Each structure stands twice: as C-alpha cells, then as structure tokens.
Image (cartoon, rainbow, N blue to C red; front, side, top):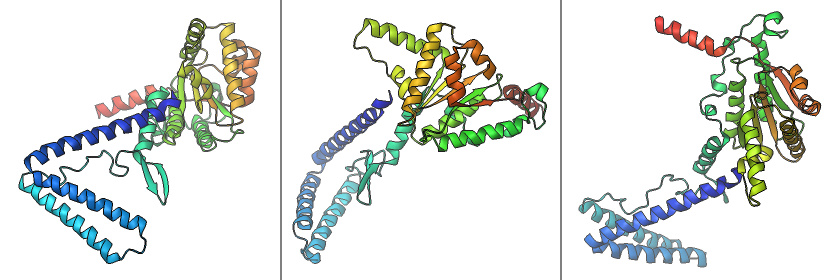
Length: 347
C-alpha cells in the first residue's frame, strides 16, 4: 500500500505531462492551419533558442551584447506571435502549456539553490494518499485545533470518574503526552500509547488528532478496529495458504507502518490464536521500532485491569511494559454536543 504511493503519484505526473503535450500539439495543429506564419515564427524561436543555449554553454566569454541581441530577437518574435494570435481572436498564451502547478510545471519536482526537491503539490498529493489509505476519514476533520477541554468537568470525583484528578486536568495531561508522542515519533524510547475509558469521552478524537498531525507531516498511519485487524490477518493466512504468491499490502503494513492504531480492542471474537497474533504484532513492531519508527496506539473501553482477564499474560505484559497507559474520564461528549445544539436551536 504505502510502498506504491510514490509510484502512483509519479504515474499521475507522467500522465499529466502526456496530456499537456497532446493538448499543445492539438492547439498548434489548429493554429498553424489558420495562421501559417505562426508556425514559421515558432520554428525561428526554436532555432534561436538552440543557438542561444549553445552560446551560453560553449563559450563563457561570449560578448554580452551578442547574447542580449539574440535574446531580444527571441522576445520580438514572441511579441509578434502574440499579436497574430490576438488578431485571430486567440489568447496570446493559447499555445503555451496549461499547468496545474506552475511551480513545477506538473513534474512534481522543483530546483532550490541547486538541489532538486519535491514540489509542494507532490507533498500534498502524498498527504492525500496517506489519508485515503490510512482508513482514517474522521482525521480529515478532527484535529488539535478543535480540541476543547471545556467538555471535561473541572471537579475531582474519584468515585464517579475513577481518577484522582479532575477529568479536565486529566485530558490536558493526555493531550500534552500526545503532542510529545508526535514530536518524538522517531525516538525508540518514545513509548506506545494505550487509551482506555468508557464510550464518548474522547479516545477516538485524540487518536484522530495524533493521526492527522502525523499524516500532515508525511508519516504513514494505519487505522484498524480490532475485529477488522484480525479479519485481515485471518484472510491473509487463508489465501496465502492456497495461493503461494498471494500478497496483501494491508497485512504487510500492520507490521511496517510508522503508526498502527488498533481501536476497540476487546470487541474481537475471543480465541487463543488471536491472542497469539496480537502478541506477534506487538513483539514485531517493538523490535522494528528499535531501528525506525514503528509505534502503536491501542484504544479500548475496558480498563487496564481487564487485560489479564481478556488476554494471555504475555499480551498484557507487553502492553503494560511498552505502552504509556491513560484512562479517559468525563461525561459523554457526544451527548453534551447534542444538548448544546438543542439549546442553541431553541435560543
């Protein structure tokens, strides 16, 4: 999946280059048939352009006056061509290529101080592909700019919320750690994140904030609910057993992507095989993270204490040992937002 993104983008640029060339050729054919003089002018401009380039490249001592004279002749021919086009009701730039991006002329690359680098349009295409292939549609709309701690109560009630600080102080600490996680994504010492808590207290929102920020920085992210994750693994195993050359990019990225998000852990069908698969994922990604970014975020409605009940001791130990554990607490934000909308509607 992610390995093919650059090939996909380059193919888009190659296709666009061909389209531009074909469009220009069609316009030239049209104009040359109506205004033959313009074809003669284009030929002269081409020949003079070649001569001008040779003068610059082959003889650094060429008199500036000769170079300027040749350049002036080219500009004069271009002006004459523009007047002819206007005379026949064509825009003066009718025979010029129409680029989607004038910076790179639809090549995807620009020169900067002697170095060639990806154009901003290329980087945006890459980010768009990352969003499309990350399985994170909400991350397009949910980000840290929309974060609002006021949805979390500023009161301490351990009996109600299960934490010793207020939900507001708690979520601000989680946000601080989330930003730190993003900034230190390359560090092997930067632990994974484990989010737990009841429905509606912001776990998915925080995941989307982290994912959106990383994707916007060109990082690879893959979101999978636990049931989908294990279905992907099961399908891969079944098909690879029957088809010796079967490949599944989603399966590969479960182990290779820079950030894997496993949501709704605990909602998958229980089986010893699946616990072994989860342990394999966590261990493989832990080992790869020592060489390059291979982080994991897990979100679940069950508490940390339930890990030992739901999973093999080795799975629980791996999560507790290599993840920073955070409990989300507060009121159901979705219900609060519905109430806010209802109040605003009645005002």
